[in-house]
Length: 205
Image (cartoon, rainbow, N blue to C red; front, side):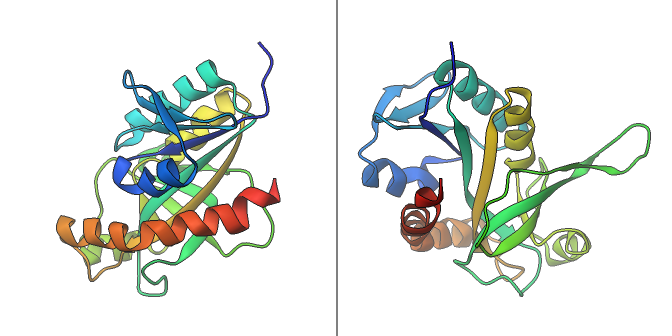
């Protein structure tokens, strides 16, 4: 089956995705193996947290729904204080800080597709949540933001020859090490992130 013109969206949690589901009038069409929401033009899949979940969900989305493009959207932590809570960034490079190539012993690097005109950042993806200020500082030498899914989404999209665009909003900084603080920050900023996507990102393609 040839690719159609629909858009795929991969988000880790319903907490982040709620404004997208409501704002786009998406209806849930599947609960397993992943929660899938759709309208005539968009398929949004909830991957769950972590690299394995993100890879499986993205592969499933690409195989079943044949999107013309995939957006990986959601929250990310800042490695330092130069990226403020609620700021939106277009990811131009992803480093897998906890996964090294066997030959070079250097971290894997991924390059998602790029759109012009957006504030950009480099992302580190790891399977462990990075919250402690000292751990963030180490990663800040190579990346601006931290998440647990981005690298796997980009890699899965490449396997299916599907364009992958990535946008993240800052949900925590070195001042936020408690899960409840991060959840509250996501609730506070997720609607602004949705509006940013609808107003500024979606019309570009």
